[in-house]
Length: 472
Image (cartoon, rainbow, N blue to C red; front, side):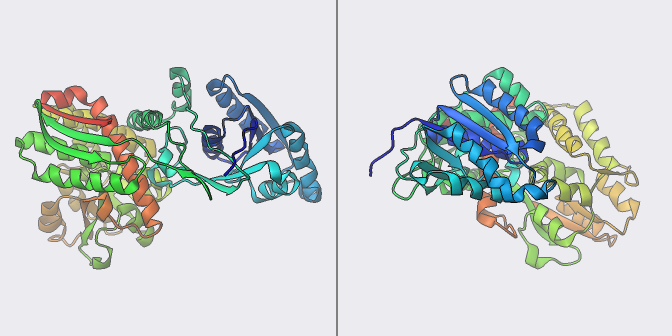
């Protein structure tokens, strides 16, 4: 097939929230290498567009950025709907002389349809950028995995996709990620670096030309200088390779021969990272059909109010917060005793394992406080499972990952309760969009695990433990 070699302009209609627009622009830039980027919005979004353009100018020094907040808002200016297309025609003047890369996954239906009607289709490359949200919700490319945001060719007369690299300096990183937690920030920065290491692939899916293959990766768990677990990922852009590798890592971490505190530390890290996800094991009131269902889906399905035991936080419940903050804010309460226990763990780290746990407490409490959940002040006694049981609240369901507390305490006292277990991502059940969400969680776990090993390097070193995750 013949490819077009003309200079290109990237056209994106602003979408709210801003993350959707940024993703479209950054991925479009990578595959089109435009000389100019034109971003169009309604007049009502002029301030949002100014912020977007400021970000783009901090990243692109050699690309012309054109801002066009010219469109009427059809919700407040109904009388202008018949002339809407006339406003869109003004965009044509800004793209004359270029081949046009048009991101159709951003913008409203009337914007996308109107532009498609007035543009010269012999110059048009219509591109759709898919996104598998999961725990990546509210983040954007280049802080999200390129393999889960491929650029799809919808209409093109011969676009030869490029593999441009997006470089973001430290100051811009700080501005873009200033409102996120320490752990989330390092996870997103880790993903940015993974994307850089795979910048040679465009991850482009066309009718006659497709390419999305990446470098291989290796995960090694060392005790001292001895590698105890080695897991290889053949192709970082292959979700199957990622899922198989994480399943192997999750299994071998239970089986490996290590001193007990070291093995506990390793599995604690895998649970917090999301290599295993919290899922339903059983319920005191019967829920056999929901075995292995992710906790977030079970809450969304049942709409039961829950109160969580301390161990649930150490099992990585925060990973599911990111996918659906609303459902957790509405239906989850944190018992006061959880905070008491967590601060006690932070205050009295008596050995290397407890020092690791104390450092994790700081990260996990920040994740929890960011959610701003309801506090259950009735359950104040420790240990927390006892405090929860004695609070005698019948309108909530207790959630724990401690089988002994579940069997010997909650069930004995007839407290409605759910026993959770950490399940490998590939074995976790999702009640909707199962494949895409499983893939998203897998990529998130991999980036977060590497982020944790960086943040907790000294604590892991004191245990003689290290985890190396690197492209090869």
